[in-house]
Length: 87
Image: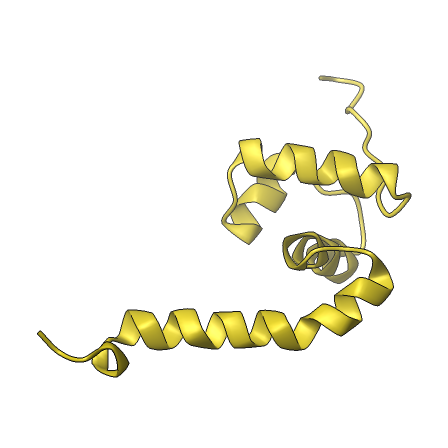
């Protein structure tokens, strides 16, 4: 069995944790978590209304994760959710 440092999956895990820790001071100032920040980045990047399905696809998140996150962002006044009239 190769050592822990020889596993690519561990290197990716460690790099991800390190990046998250680097972002914490910035995210605390914004009052958001890293996944919430990613949602905001997509919305800023796209510059207009986005459907939940499109967001879920872009962020590789499922609806069960994304919907509550959007509700929390809306409660913070960072996003506005609207149901399309045709829905």
